[in-house]
Length: 341
Image 1 (cartoon, rainbow, N blue to C red):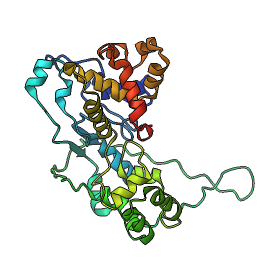
Image 2: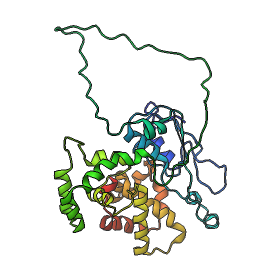
Image 3: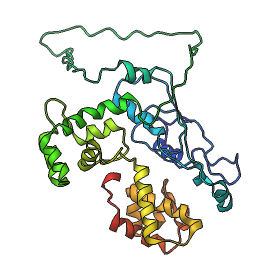
Image 4: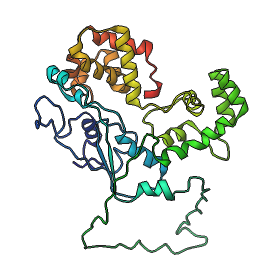
């Protein structure tokens, strides 16, 4: 199915694809929930800032020149996922156990991987382009440029060769280079290192803002560094510092953070409705990351869920009644929402 901004309700289609409901549900396997549409063709709507954990294959059908865009594109398929979660028969689900995603393939038809691994100059200083001359209106006149030439090829577009390369836990060069300059600058700052040694995180964060951010050499800031890491959520300055000084091995994705928070919820609240944990988890996740769902629940306007595409009334009814109030209360008391906004 084509999912671009030219298509009516395209935004809803991206949500349905992530929720395994694009084109309706497929019945190819009993008790397994998946969508009829297995392939989505998109230009930009589902490339950056989009989370689809059970994605197994991503095809790049155009060249990419921005490293941050490339990191986010390939990051759409690197999320962890347990396929047993799609089983809605508790007995079959228990029999299956964990079916965790272990392989994700990136089909790269324009050598983007080689470009960012071997050719792209991460330390190159880019010259700003000259202002584009205006045409008409007096003054020094220039003739407008000729229209771009088109080129048609009628021969079959064949794949010249095929090769498969395994990417290990160290990731690709593009994953390391863009963040490396900030880490080098942070670790070489003696005053920051001393604050980190004392674990004075507030003072360390203020030091980063004043001494490392928005300087003429690199113009570091939170948004640029988030894009460089390919994260689908906000990151804090403390997380940047902890990663630079080795306190954490990597930044967790939005889905991983929600998993952590839900595990804390289970340990703290100890719900005994084991067969309904999946429904509670979906409510927990939707309430955290969907502002519209949060507002509907908080305002008590539950009838609005009937027309909500991400979490509807049928989903709420699956949640045990006593947890429909306790889960939002728990989130408000114990889960910081800033990373998910």
